[in-house]
Image (cartoon, rainbow over all chains, first blue to last red):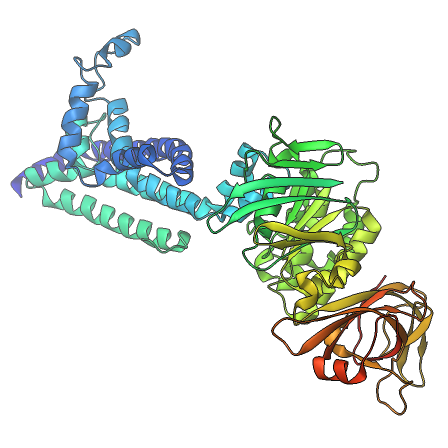
Length: 234
Length: 363
């Protein structure tokens, strides 16, 4: 508890907490928006297709559900690092590495949270009754028109659910963030890593504040999801 | 003309259907469940791909060995069994969905939004959510929506099978009115013979994926060589004209081939052309003018031919109304015993005893 006292007296404490929350929200917000941009077309495609190709892609996208986050983080670290396959492309933009950077964190989060956004969206699209799409066809709507004006609005609750779930899951992730982000204050330190830091430093007060905050937020998220997702899958 | 030629191996049988029908009025596609009706409809619409099939409406080839017009470019309106209304749009927005995508000035006489709303009585429904509509309301909206896409052909897949009887008749009457008013050919799929008899002008009879017959509905129904006449619900349809209402007796007078018929109740408008259904089992034959009887309608008719029904003690008798040979065709089903006892002969003029008459619709 002596450590905790020392930390509280540290003048930049409030400032650093605000920074951590801001980084967390920015990461979760960016990730969940990008997730939708990926999961909507991918979910639509997967909802139409049957067969090996679609199964392989669906399985790959679902991998983060079972893989230890450290495994994912480790490979991403190698992949995005200065000796990874992307390094030559990164150098074109004057970057040496994406590891330990905010963009790297976003890429890691995207992969890690993809199944949580993809699953409801795919299920939402699969639940669009085929005869409604056929009715739209007979009313002279082309393929994109049907997707945009029939499938998308009907699947909207699932898309909102995916957005909330993607946001909340990104906010709560730890392993990947630690591996690829490195917990750098002001850059890649987020709420979940801060809790770990606080506990390591025996600063239980801070750990309590952050943990309770995330707990309440997570509960509210699940509550909101239940209201939105009519399927009641969650 | 609507010309269709399809050969396709389905799960249970091979669909091998060729027919050409005049593209006007209401064309019925009739057959038992699993006879391939819905497949044919879906192939005509283009929703089901069928390589090698040929589909042509008038001079427009929708599909043959080399051409394929995608379903959204065929201009076929579709009415599904359960309506298929968009749940995220209200009634007005469902209609707008169609109207907005309709080609401008496609046909010389475009179908007007107001006329559709009027004829299908949609005005009170416009602001409603589709989830809160009754089955009949749903189908009226679905028909209206299909019409507002300015189709060249309207396909109806058992549109009233999920409805109760009263609502069914209401929708059928609306379809008849629309067909008369809009000059739009309709292809109507059903396995209900009474429905077919009520509204179709032309009938294509399907049996196990093949066309068993095709022709004007009144002739098809009374053709003893077709399986229709052998069904327990065999019936005839007759063109009639409402000649007046007898307030004292409470019955409507109809003129059918120069003979006056009576139906209890006030039905139809004066001088309106209409169609009546007569079940074969509701028609009896008498050699002499019937004396005291409760039966209202006893018109004369001449026997053309008769055929014993297989595996049944009944005989189908085909007649023409009136004493000369130019009346409409009518089917009667009588017991073999009475047929043999009375020794009726083809060419003989008899008096009919018509127990029940159903008025279909008076425009």
